Image (cartoon, rainbow, N blue to C red; front, top):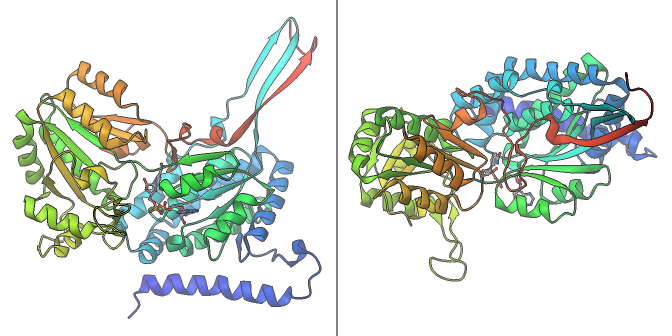
Length: 484
Ligand code: NAD
């Protein structure tokens, strides 16, 4: 029997689909594509071409209405994502069946306060003997955004605030497994933005995103910039399009614990970060390198804080379930693929997969492995973390760098030794480096700073902001308008 959440997803999506069908029938004889588009679709279209055109028309209106309209639209998004956090968190959880409901709700609520707006646009002026030069930050127009299954509505919400603050409209190709909740949020945002500004399609998408709609979006002449949030395949695909792509790619964040760390606190932080939304976050702790002299104590603290230890046979049994080798182990392409049935599932579900019963409230499983173990190497996105003993902090840093694979994403260290912290910060060269806290502090959740769920790693923009989605323009007045 369908749960209430599933029925709600189906009901809202059926409404959208019914309206689209009616629109198609009504538009059968329509002469022009622009007229065939339903002006009350509020962002959800069947064809990518229509979604991109509608976003472009709304971009032009936003440009006409100015910065105040951007502020009003953002205000509406902030209000709605907090107001609807529970309902939309439940929708996303019901649709994707991954992660933890409480964290899905929290990820939406924090978008309201922590994602920056127009105040981030830093204009500059130079005044001197030759006159006045103004450097301003202009929108691109329509941005094509690709969002992940791991946090569909939070990512699209953060992107929407950042991109509208910079004066853009957005067309999304969302993850097919999280497209319904995305469509519901996009429609609600547009309806409320329309009430506040008269613009109906600042955020658009398609009912059924596919690789073909991705292609159509990337090729659309009115889509001027891409922003990709996802794994290696989509980053590679976006970079091949010939358009500028801001890529928020994969991570495999290592944790180093040295002999000076506060071990009780380190254990709590590792659990908090690695168990957050069942380790779906790209910034989430994925493997631990601990200095041998304190390894036993760290393990004791992890158990004390509620994590459940697997023995080596159980770790191997879980690895066998957690990864699949499409072409067979050791043959052809030996690269493993993570088993989607276990990604983002509860620790108790992982345990059950290997015939083990743990309390349902268990946040995290852990087990000791060697540094070259598959659980260390692969971005598993599951609430299991491998613990690797190393002789000293230098080896820990070296192994952490290997495990991070040069993604330049996130690394975490627990230490009270300033020299060790500095050494790792410099050597690991990641976009986020978190010291003595859980990973999410790097996005402003319990740490200073602002939030975005798109952390541009291979392309180097970092935690994205409104400035990320602007074009720098210079306007020069010669021999006038200077004030001296
Ligand atoms: P995914 O790569 O499977 O999907 C992400 C998006 O890319 C989806 O919209 C999907 O439909 C699309 N996609 C996938 N392959 C594609 C292809 N070949 N061509 C066109 N589109 C394609 O990832 P996911 O499981 O949804 O999310 C998890 C991944 O995303 C992890 O690797 C995680 O580290 C990464 N991620 C990174 C950030 C960041 O800010 N850097 C944030 C969230 C997730």
